[in-house]
Structure formats: structure tokens, C-alpha cells
Amino acid sequence: MVSIVIPAYGKLPYTLACLRSVAQHGARVPFEVIVVDDASPDNSAPTLGRIGGLRLLRNLNNLGFVGSCNAGAAAAGGQFLLFLNNDTQVSPGWLDALLRCFAERADCGIAGSRLV
Image (cartoon, rainbow, N blue to C red):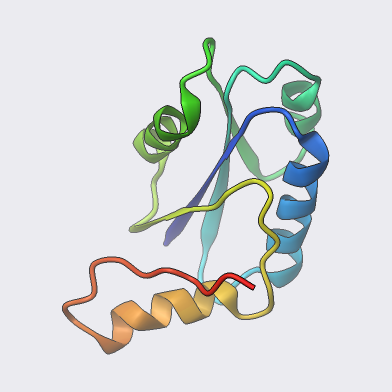
């Protein structure tokens, strides 16, 4: 139902912490996680490639944040797109709360989360 797109350029520990929080706090609805490695200069891609259940896209050249978001969106299969920075850690109920906006308001086209 939801495609979570996480652009990443290096900073592997941040990305791993983000993925751990998504795995820990999941959601009641099905979702996929797509990490777009933006030609990271470190060992991010090989490490991320070993994580089961993760879709890893690798840009051959650095496309920047927006280019990586667009690449992830193009590969997404969910009804909803969710863009998540790789230095984000989510909390319990996060995704269900975002989706609730769409169920409660027929005119909702975009929802954003509270940053803590």
C-alpha cells in the first residue's frame, strides 16, 4: 500500500538506524522500503544490498536529493509514496497516523509528520 523511499548518500550508520526504526515500528498496512543509493563514496551500497526485504536502487552518478527521490518514486509500487530522509528515526504509530489523514479527509492530497 505504501512505498517508503529513502534517498541516501553515504552516512551508512544513519541509514541503518533509520531502517531499524522502520522495521521496529512498522505499520498495520503493507509497505515496501526502497533505498536509493546516490553513488555513495563509502561502502553503503554493498552493506545495504545484504539487507533482506529492502529494495536497493543504485544511481550510477550522483543525482542529488530530488533526483534520488524521483528515481525511487519511479520504481515504487505502492498506492502512497512516502519520502523519508535517511537520518530520520520513526516512532510507534507513525505511518498509520499519516495514512489516517487520507481516510478521514477525502480532499487530502499530502500529509506531513511532526518533527521532534
